[in-house]
Amino acid sequence: MRNLEATCSVRLSNLYAAMIAIGLAIMGLAGLYLSYDGGLWQEDSTWRLLIRHVGSLLIVSTVLSFVWQLFGKRAFMGEILARANLAPDVEDTGIRQICMSSTDVAWLQLFEQTDNLDLTFAYATSWRGQYRFQLEELLKRKGSRIRLILPDPENDVLMKSISTSWQLDPNVLVSRIVETKDAFLRLAEIAKDHESSCKVWYTACHPVLSMYRFDHYAVVNLYAYVKSQRVPHFTAVKSGSLYEYVAEQFDRLITDSGKMVRRVP
Image 1 (tube, rainbow, N blue to C red):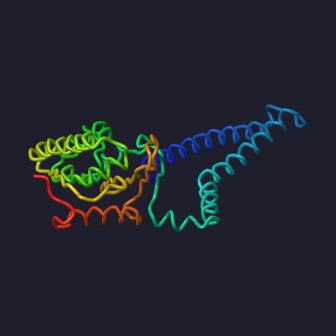
Image 2 (cartoon, rainbow, N blue to C red; image 1 turned 30 degrees about the vertical axis):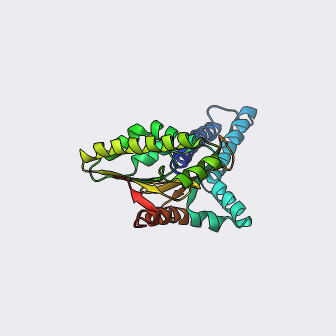
Image 3 (spheres, helix red, strand yellow; image 1 turned 90 degrees about the horizontal axis):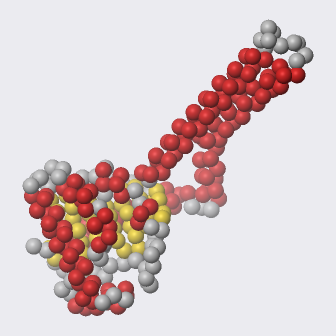
């Protein structure tokens, strides 16, 4: 799976294909062997000829289907992307998955393979609650780190802008941001006991997307202009330009020296 779930799917698919191919090949060889056993058949036996042909067909079809499974499908997909002039762009960005729901992202695998996590979002109440255990377990690893950037709830102009864009009561918005800040400060207490760190910043920037940077993958999801249950989520590998973009944006915000961000004590 170039993304984590897809890799498992491809490997399982290849495994099943190999098992089926081996089984069919054995059946084909057995049929050929039996068809040439003179002690079992008369020379012109119809059944003997039928089994011989079926055995040959099984072997040939097994080889062809196995070659298609391992090489043909990939070459075919590559040809489609090349025809559409998409292959270089997709490869350069490092995108490994595009989905319309957070539940389709392989969050658990991403948590298992990282010691550092950089986050920037508005409040992510549902996501934070769903993966609270994983956040805690990450910080129990010595030397691990979580950094979070939130919209500044004390910036009235920013709160008004966001609440207007999202058609959300400003007081509700502020409350959700503060709840998320408090939750991560509680995680910071867990971090102290395990020689890890969890830090929070506020920013005056209006959020236009959420970013989750793990050690090897980054996840980006866009915010909708109007309320929607489905928003695009992009998962990209570290070697791609999208991951580099996420890293650059986050690092520039963190090192802004108080102009657009401030550390939450």
